[in-house]
Length: 80
Image (tube, rainbow, N blue to C red; front, side, top):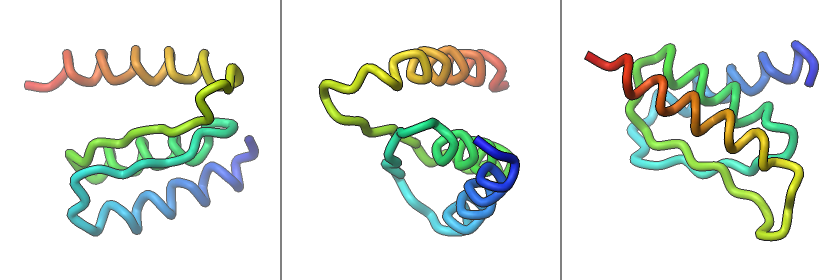
């Protein structure tokens, strides 16, 4: 992922953060879109649940899912 594509994902996340979504479901390919969106929502203080979707038989994203899960557990433990 390039810096340009990450900044595009963050910009898109900023736009989505302006709305009061309960859940946002994003495709997982290389992980850039969901990463940028998570960063943006976190920065904006949103409590929207963000879910990643991938084909059932895809193995490419397995490590990303583990990283996101660990990140989510860390964020939950840091909340006051």
